[in-house]
Amino acid sequence: METTPTTKTPRAPFLPVFHYPEGYRGPNSPAEQLVRLVRIFGLDPGPALTLSQHLPKLPYGAEGWFVVPTDDALKRKFFRKAVSADEKFTHIRRLMLRKVAEHVVLNFWRDLFRLDPQNLRSCERTKRALERIAITQADSDFLIIPAQLGLRHYDRSPDQAREFFIGSAHAPEALARGDEFGLGIVEISSILLTHHERLYRDQDLGMDCTGEAFAPQGDGNYSYVNTFGFEDERVHIRTSPSNHVRRAFATPSGFII
Image (cartoon, rainbow, N blue to C red; front, side, top):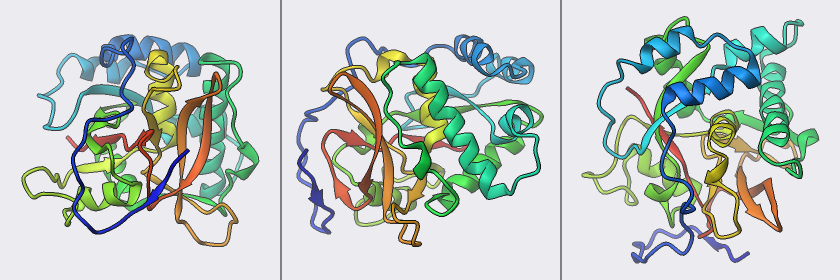
């Protein structure tokens, strides 16, 4: 698949070659998403269900509300043994990929042995954003996050999308938002678990895990991201350099509320 390195020259606008599939008509209601996630994970939907009835206006740039389980709730439910914080971080992401394999498509390809504390970490911006959202949605096993699933950052590399979040040459002041952040494996896996139709054809726009950084060799060179795509009749998660623009993939992002 063709890739091109990030450059500092202005982007030439063009119509996306890859889109959301016709069968995807936006997010299901938070209540519908909670029903499915509770069946899969057995977590408590109560506080999130209450919150879902009093959500504020969507922030500019968001396409809808998406429900994701919290790391803390998944830790309590599935990983009670005393392990390090880094180990829990990667265990949870392996769990999410296994759930996608079980509930989305049976031929889901994943390279689980490469997800370990030496080669995967959360980006600080995403980590802090999720912590802030969790404070406003305290005591909940789920977070309800306003998000968009890629088209907002079409024709941007993950690095360019990160620059856009904070304002740069790639982020016109009128469009950049100080409260935007990239999503990671947990958030995107949850979206696929509640919206199977978002990614099921070769021409569907894939999703970069821009909220996390990946070092394939475990050598501290976190210059890659994991990506969710559809190819050869299978959903797959693979890796790509974070400075490459790939027109079959784009960055989903969330917004702090």
